[in-house]
Image 1 (tube, rainbow, N blue to C red):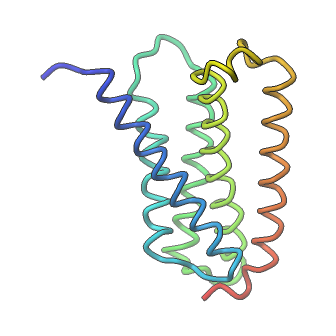
Image 2: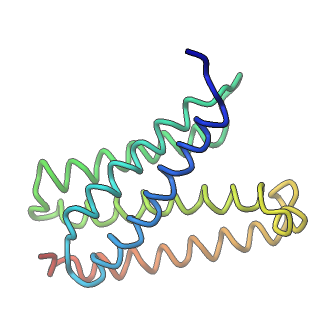
Length: 160
């Protein structure tokens, strides 16, 4: 059986997109004080798979994507432990919310990177991703997620 990079890439992208969509729904649930058990399980599972499958691409040295993937896996381990092993008890509720939001942020961060790499109009604005349009976009995403994190932690006491 041979390794087909196109098929693998498509699989990785599909898993990532499912993680992002289910993450958005899970975050809306958190904001509404609802756990959304099935959606949360899909979000956490596909986000773990996204990070793991990211290591399956051919590479010859450590890349920034590997570092983001490793951080994401650590954050996801906290989220999964807090959610399922500790059942959101006490401070584990805030630990879950913060780590779930962080994991979702890492997915969206990578999505922005890929959009700037693959969408011609965005790539023209920031071909090396060191230009101001890329930095401003990532800063806006970060600020939005910080706001999401604060809002969800404040509302997490009512998770049902």
